[in-house]
Image (cartoon, rainbow, N blue to C red; front, side, top):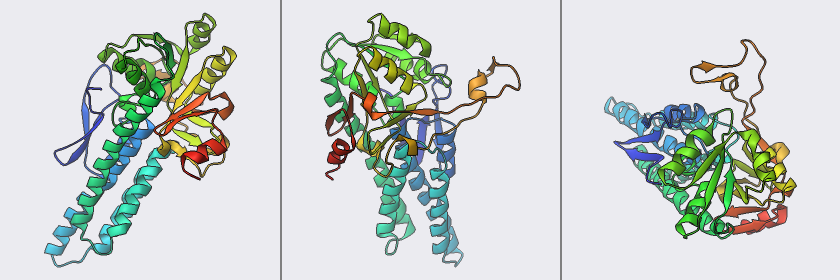
Length: 357
């Protein structure tokens, strides 16, 4: 992907504003934990890996902001160390509250907290901030390396000429770069395979229509856009060879939470004997959650369902449900594609082995 989803520039985090793609291409600048949290909450940035990277930079930005405040305080003769600590805790809290389902958010925050706590007692705030910024840079670079590794493992599963259906956007825009599900497709194309993509529109936020389609058009990878309720028709006609999706959280038993509508695609794929693959970095696996029933499902605003942007199509005052994710049982997952390799028919034991336990 030639576009940087997130980038560090002018001592700020810049993120592509995915709310306005493909009509416009703009970066939004963030300079604090609160501004990054708002960017995550409002879906300027989305996709579990990208959310994790953004959160890491949110912590670093808050440390930089607070260290400047502390420096001013010391120039006035005040200590302010406790203010720095309290400010950092507030920054962690606001970031943790931004979106509940994507476990990468909490994984990244814990990793940043461990860096902070390992040096907090003997290191001045300005140096703490630089260490946290270096860690955020490493998380971004690591995400791209992991996506590349997943892509290489997953590309082997796709035959030359495969027609691959995907749901939502699990591409470069959902990560620091390359992508999870679309990363598998990119890697297969890079390996010389002729791959074509079928993208579900992905209502109500239209990530497939707006973002996956945009990415594939940028790279001249053949893509056909369909509405979500066309997937069964396409499968019944023999026009889908494989399904590859991303995920926002995987439970210890292999149950997968992904964008709403994924479960329906998995059921249809099983009915038509089509392999259903989930591209999943280890940071998205939550061993603390026993099964999918324990995964928190975000409920988003009603106006995402009743219309889009300035267009309102539903009756005024109608009652709405808007769960942003659903859970696909592990029994419907043909394989998890991870940076450590492919896990066929994932279950508690095979997932535990990924972590050496």
